[in-house]
Length: 363
Image (tube, rainbow, N blue to C red; front, side, top):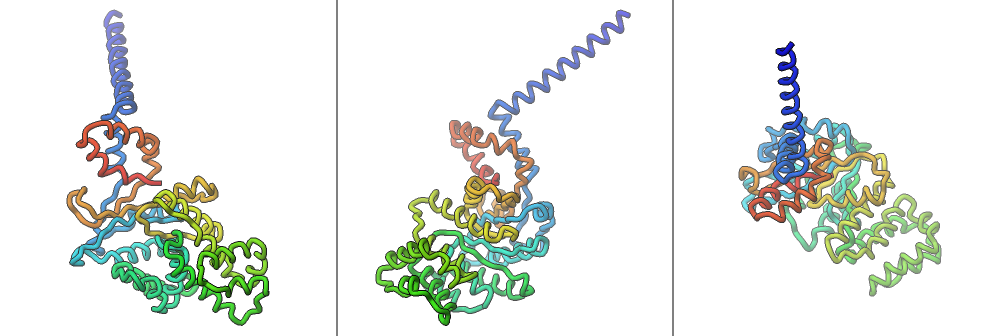
């Protein structure tokens, strides 16, 4: 009997010790800097996949199959910088390869691009027609060979798709050089309705002097408010493009926050027009999608955001893809600002440790 009592006490003591250790471990993980750090690192290790884009034949895209089936909007965070000697790898080829993979598994209908809305309209004409003058119209001043190469390959890829599968490209930035791109595409739209009867109420506005471009666009904007039906009857399916360019001409982007706000608003308008489509985009900063969620709750499908980086933080290797499964990192996401503030209050060494992985968590 005594032995049994001793055995029970020992078991109770062991259970108490185990319970105490468990509670201490949980408290350590939940409420200490090191605990947060361990959870954070574990989440990163479990949810990050490295792929060396330098060797396209070695890329196993099947890692993304689950997200591709589940999601509708795919955004690549493009932080790759092409080596001046062009010896690293052809970025445009990698981007097209990845688009091709996503498209084959998910039927991408729309490309969203980090250019102004009107520039996107012009580039869309190029990738669907191959008319080189359209590409030259966008890059007439800034001959960015890497970007030109990307759009050339995007045209080749799009041209080889079945006609009913071809992509539509949208820019979502403001009209940073609206006097060039906006007027170019407005003229394109006016040429399309050249043989249509134009009511006098809007004719004078559309074909007014452009000596003062601000006045020209503003007069049309005010005229649309009064005669929207006439504009819709004239431009029909092109009215969406015409109206968005006119309104986008007046967006103000004095800082990065305003730029992201404009991107979000433009994306919402595009998404509302094509809410059954699948989207693929390449952006340095994907924050606009967070604002889009806040402003327009009907974007129900999760966004799959993939980081492409090209820096020396991770083993000095070039061209990696990092995919983060945000479901598994929900706890970390809720606490990452707190964790970040803790690190920032510590030494630079600790801050440096965080800076290498903090950007990897997105939604």
